[in-house]
Length: 276
Image (cartoon, rainbow, N blue to C red; front, side, top):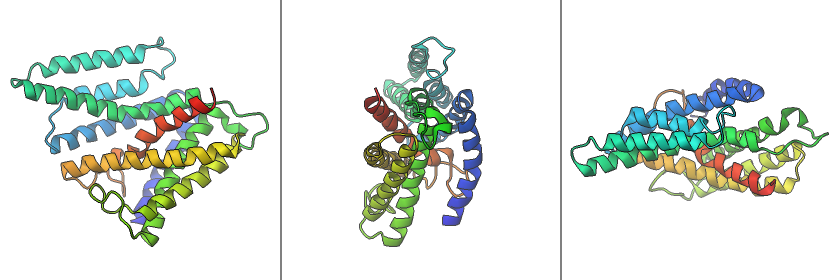
């Protein structure tokens, strides 16, 4: 299991680091591709769980929600307008169902699936809103955009790795066993400690007070854990072990995105509040 996780990380890390370095449109492109693959998996899981949708419309709507607002060439508010058009089209498609209850279910399921995966769009928004790195900071070369996205990425990975290693070695008491039987309280504590340590060090390297890391670390841990559990709930309802077979050791794209879907908006909210 650990070998497969390391192999998956080795596959994902190099292209991610390249994209983060170039940033800008490359980050938006990566997010759009990830959302497209993730949305396909979400609608397959929803169908397996008995919730009919309009998958093609849902995938397009998810991508629009995720990337339209961060594209600087578009006028302000274009993202909301395009998303609204997508919702209207979904509503129109729902009217074609003979049973109004089926139409309502399809409308709600499609909109939910698109909004859920579209949360990844907060990653490029974080890059756009991140505070500048003070002159002389250890990681000044990264800049605020790349630096704070790395805080998010490394924080989620630290939580996932810490929770897995500590839970595997010391885990005794179950946590949310009705959703994910393998989770333990000890694992959650270990993951929270790991992400807090990484966040403190990295935030300090970006020239900010370590206190921000002490506050942000547990926030990332809580959001990442919630995101992981929500995806586990979806897979459990669908009777699936993984969301797909795209990535060795981690199943589908959604299995890699789940924690980021909740952690990305949480980190952005913290940045907006702490660095107005």
